[in-house]
Length: 136
Image (cartoon, rainbow, N blue to C red; front, side, top):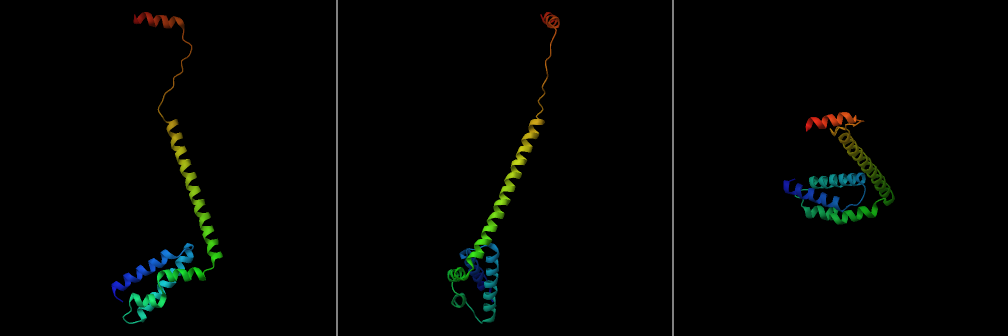
């Protein structure tokens, strides 16, 4: 099998992958199966071309359409919902972690800002007068 045919098959598989709508696991298994079938066909036949592959397997759009017609929609939908829930949980955890990190940084800056606060207590009036007289 020549390099050009390998590139064309890779592009063919990629286009099939882009046309299939389903969960990751189902897509991965289907693409793996179709990829193996295409490569087996290409290696078993002499002087095979992309036209031969398309005639034997169909265009990427036809393959995707047939996949959707034969797919167990309920199972795919259930898997996609589980994936969605897991993804939302991960995003929520990351947002909470980021909020905690921002709070910790702000709290650390407030505590260690370097500002010194001095208390002024009662001062004897005689001391104030004495200090004023010395400065005059």
